[in-house]
Length: 147
Image 1 (cartoon, rainbow, N blue to C red):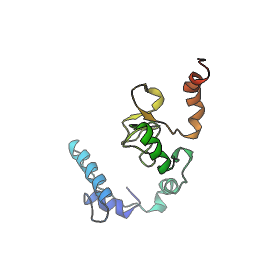
Image 2: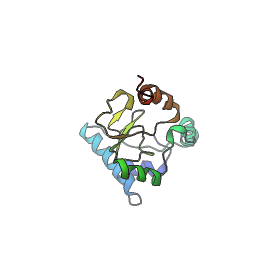
Image 3: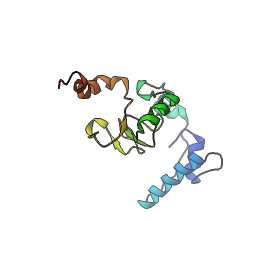
Image 4: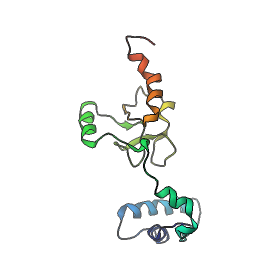
């Protein structure tokens, strides 16, 4: 049940004509369902009956949704050629490969802190609430050889 007419149409018709991105998403979704022998039909649910989803869809972005300005990132990328965005989401990632902080279908992994970064060639612009955790884990190594 969805409160968006467009989403209902794209799911039920397996795509549409206005948005190639939505067509691709709905096609992938239908293929995923068919592979698992699932039958899906989207039904419109007015927002007044789906209050929580309506509130969440209007929430403002939080600090974890920030990203480095694109031109500044491109200058860094030209110097170091990062391959993986370590603290990204689908909407704020700077690279094709992302490791998200929470579960996301587009991510190659979840929780960059759980991985070994030696061979990742990763770019890190963590959410501000994780900067201290990053410092405690890696910052001590760069202070006069102290561990």
